[in-house]
Structures are given as C-alpha cells and as structure tokens.
Image (cartoon, rainbow, N blue to C red; front, side):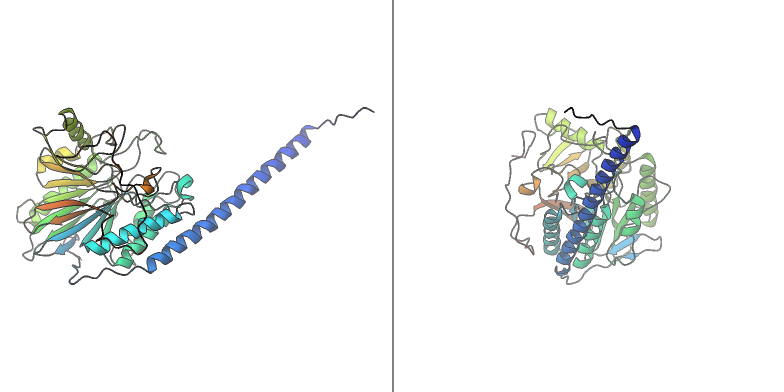
Length: 419
C-alpha cells in the first residue's frame, strides 16, 4: 500500500512558522521573566548585605558647604585625604551576584580603614554587560554603590566611565546623573554640570583654609564612552575630554584665581579614560629602555595590560596641553585599564593609574589580586600632595566577609618596576 504524500499549502506553512515563532517568543519571555526575578533577588540580597555594614567612625568629619559662588567646598587647615576607587564594576544582575558582593566587601573595607574626607570613584561603577552580569539594568550597580557609600557615611562623588551607561543599557547618562543628584543622598557630591558642554559630571570641588584661600581644586571630568560608530565598544574606539570641556576647565580655574586674590590654586584632575599623554609618556619611557628621559620620570607601579597597554582615545583635544599651560594641575588620576597601576611624571604633571576593584569584567580577574586596591591621596595645607597605592589584601583592611583567596600574579612582560 502506497503512502500518500501530504501537500501543505502556503497558508499551512505560514501557520506552522507562526506557531514556532510564538513558541520561541514565549520561551524568550519566560527566560526574561525568570532572569528579571533572579536579578531582583540578587540585588535585594546585596542591598541587605550593605545594610549590615557599619558606618565609618570619624573623630571630626569635615562637612562640605556651598560657597558664595555655588562650589562645593571643604574648609580645613590640616591634611585633606582623598580615596580614589576605580572600576568597581558592579554588574547588578543575577549572574554577577557573588562578584558584586566581593566588590562591595572590598570597597567597604578600604573606605572604613582609610576614613577619607572624600571618595572619588573614577568610572565604571556599574557594569551592565548582560552575558556577564545577567542584566541590561545599569541603575542597579549605581544604586548598590550609592547605598554603600551612604551607609558608610562618607562624602563621595563619581566620574562616569564607558561602562556606566552602555548604548544597550536601560538608563542614559542624563538619567543616572539625576539619580546621583538625588537629595536623599546626604553624602553624594556629584553634579551633572554645565549642560552646554559635552558629557555629564564635569564639576569642581574646592578645599580652602580658614583664611578663605583655595589650597586645592579637584576637577572631575567625563571622558565619554565610544566614538566613530563604535556604539557597543567592540572596537575599543574610546572617547576623551572635548574642547568645550577644556574651555570650561580653563574658565573655572581663572574664576578660582580671581576668588583666590589673583593666585592660581593648585589642582588635581580625575577622570576615567586616560588622555593621550599617558600613552606618550609610557612609550617614551619604554623606548628609553625603561629609564627616565627629559620629559618622563618614573614614580612607581607597573603596567600590566597587554597589546596597546594604554587604551586611550585616538583623539586629543588639548586637555593636557592646557593643564601644562595654566600650571595649576599637578596630577591626573584615571582608571579604565585594570591591570595598569603605574605613575609617570610627564612634563611636570603626574599621570597616575589607580589600583582597580573589578571582579567581573576581565576573565579570571576575580582570582587575581596584584591589581586590586585603591589610591590614597593626601593634600597638604600648602597645596602639595602625595599619593600611594594601597593593596586590598593587607591586614589593615578588615572586611565584613572573609576575603577571597587570590593569586598575587606577576604581570606580563610589558610590566616594569623601579629597582
């Protein structure tokens, strides 16, 4: 007996295709719902963990105020202590829950021990990369970090990094700026800044003595994310400080000079992506057999990134040149390249990388420890400063949870260290 072949009409084929498509959409919806629920639970667990952390105990905590020009100002005749954190990389999703806990644990331990007057996070607080974090929600990372800093009771501010607001993440830089400016945050000093210039979070904080003199100005700048149609950052085409930001920096410094009875104050600059001169200085040093040159003097640290080593923008809109010209800014501090933690003086300005926090972004980095820590910056009453890298894996940093076991790895062959 012969089997009859079933002939399907175009309508039947379409209905089969439609059923398969609907099943696929339903599966995606179910998976998304499960992921969203798991993410909410993960964020809640880390939020509960943060609520158990004790506030930092100060003998006499400096309290900033707005001066007559509207600038946030600390007043002291003593040393002023800044703690730079960078690349905290809180994923804020169900896939990153345990690594987020470790990052929170590390930040809390270092801030508690150092008792800084101000914490400056130089970018990539959040890391909403879905295949590592399990979410597109970049507000989760910002919320957890803000909750942590408010729980610690320490004055803090941030500079945006390229990962804080990805093209595919839920919330824009404008939205996250409004979030950080929330009046409910008692200790957050972030300002969205002048809307007429590029970026969000271009602002300055002053340190004055009791005579009313500005002893140090702290500039926080937005180095943007990606350029040249590299919307998702897969080609590593990074942005940098733009010309109108440079003009704002110059104008603000000149305003501070006028406020300071004609004396240009000393200043420090904080941002995420290194400016081009970090690369110039590094390769001039390398090309001279890891020895000082007329332009470059080695301060401390190592370069641990491979490939280009210094991952900056191909564009240079003159921020470093303007800083050199004005003679105010004596040091710049960045993050971005997690394995770099070197400092070079280039044409009279210190170019510094900090230790990073990252447990999430780089493959395997959660099991490595040489690069993890912070930078402690001490500003003196005379406007001078010194800065020191501090490893997280020191006894003085007592964490709430036990610290993870890590390998204190030797960085690759591009590394260098003073004899």
